[in-house]
Amino acid sequence: MSSMSMDDLESRRGWVVFAAIVMFSVGCFRIISGISYLANSHKINDFTAGLFGDNMWAWGIWDLGIAVIALWAGYSLLGGGSFGRVVSYIWAVLVIVNSFSIMRWEPWFAFAMIALAIFVIYGLASSPSETYEPASSSGPPQ
Image 1: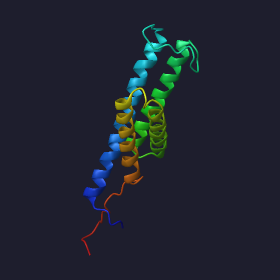
Image 2 (image 1 turned 30 degrees about the vertical axis):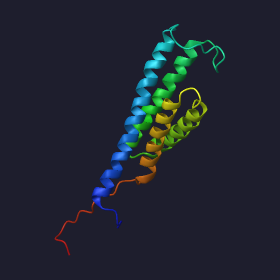
Image 3 (image 1 turned 45 degrees about the vertical axis):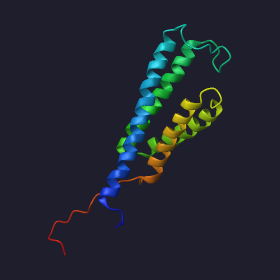
Image 4 (image 1 turned 30 degrees about the horizontal axis):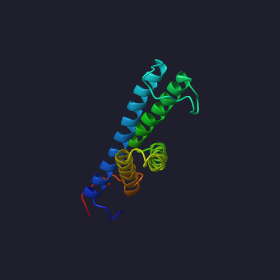
């Protein structure tokens, strides 16, 4: 038996739901950006020196792949799966590293993203990986 109360467990479960909502929002925004890349919009930043060069369709496929992984991770978090935890931890660490790299140009955005990633890490680290159900007894309590 654990010494954790049900109220404490429920509040920690709320942090996991918060992390799942963050992953769902990452997935939705990546779907939007992936579709805009596939539409070959010229209103997007110049990525000619990037990983895929100026091949906007490759950036679109990349973003749609990230969207699928993020949505899957959010669904996994809500179901109590470990895949969502691993992907969320990796996402948060990458966001922190990326935010420190853009801190010089976008300090407020970088600070907000670091805070969001820290909240996700805290939420996942402070909650147990499995939920505990109260034991049901078939007879009267002893």
